[in-house]
Length: 173
Image (tube, rainbow, N blue to C red; front, side, top):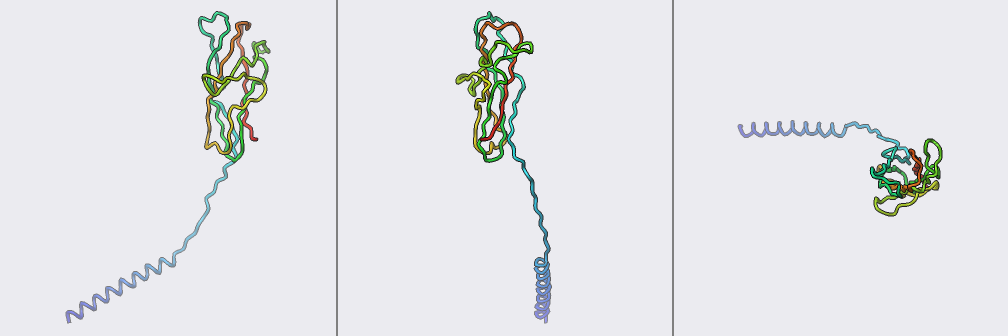
């Protein structure tokens, strides 16, 4: 009798476990779900920015009014393009001559020279666009490059403060 009771209890426990498991499986198949979409629109970007608005040259303390080449000084040019296009960053002077005292002077814009190297390949600034940077497609965030300047002092300039506006433009081809 003890053996029979043991088997009856075992069958009862097994039945309860099976019914419970069936309920779990039944609940799993009766599950309800919903879904939604997450979206964002990224606008096209074709942007250029400079890390500074001024590049200032200083004459050496012992300057004796002889021709001199000042520099190099630099500015960081940053471009951001996020579409598959060919692009170029261009540089030019807004005038053929520096201003002094608010009026055009006889100091030529070409006395300012630029390069991507601090030591060589300097080109004279002009009022015509020159390509500084170029690429195709996405820049992968902000792409930055140093542009170096040197300034030719002829020794014949009149006393005064001279300034020249330099313009960087980002274009697609």
